[in-house]
Amino acid sequence: MESSEPGRFRKPTLWPGLWIPLLLVAIGLMVTGLTANKEAQRAMALAEARYYAQHQALVNHLLANVPDRSGPEEGNQQPVSAWLQTLFDDTLPDSLGLRIDTLERHTKMPLLEIRTNGPVDPTRALRTEVSPLNHHWILTTVPSPESLEKVAHAARRTVWIAGLALCAVVAVLILLLNRRLHRQALHISGLEQREIGADHQIANFQVEKSILRQALNDSEQRSRDLVALSGAVIWELDEDARIGFVSPQIAELLDRAPADLVGQPLESLVAPAFQANFRRALEAARSDSSIERIDLLLLHRDQENEIPVVLRVRALKDPVHGLSGFRVSTLHQVASPDRI
Image (cartoon, rainbow, N blue to C red; front, side, top):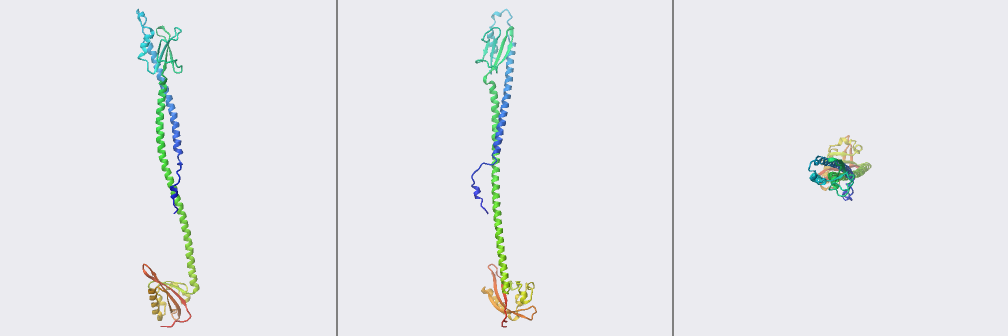
């Protein structure tokens, strides 16, 4: 089987599915950004609505708490800036600045100014005209620079933290799954390579088997041809000298069919005068492990004619079981052997 060792030391490459977690992270970041902006705008709108409500509450507070100046002690009453300062000291939220200007005289000096550093931002300021005690004033409120943006930034930061954490968790999980799929793909690829190698080896074995079978057939055909050309009869005997196989040439020699002789003792075909010599030849072949030659007569089918032959015997021995049988060749000869 072909070795798969080179596949274990291949250079590390990028996982083929890395674009999946990258795409999901990119989509997650885009959705997080859109959600963060939307939530920041919503938080900004809520903060502005709260700012409008606070502005209207200050206007109502001013109109509801204007001191009565129609009494006889009007001269002893506090100046306007003093009671306005007292009125808004405890009620003005920390996130707002307040300025009250009068419309009755042309002056740049406000009646009251609390936490309004520099000029009022016209994009953030809210102005309302009020007329307490027949005075015409402008009440202006302005939020602190970070009162509105801080809320939006807090909402945007919260969404981004949640989105980044979720993207990180999803990306890690997908990377782990991708790593597992990549290992499985490598394992399957290795198995496929081994299967290809096994198929090649099996194909090689089939070719070798065909070659060996053809060589064996050629060898068997060559042996049959040599036997046929030699005119000899080949016998295969078991350990009791019974016929297991006899070549077709026996039909010409003794006028007997090979199938009729299977299972019979070869000694029954030997003329009675030569049976003792035949038995001694078998014993000699068994003990000496050599090829024994003997001239004898075989009985023809008609039981009247006797055929002179040269018999060569070789004992077949198995290293485990010992004697397993005999292999005998019989060749017809013209001269008749002497009877004993």
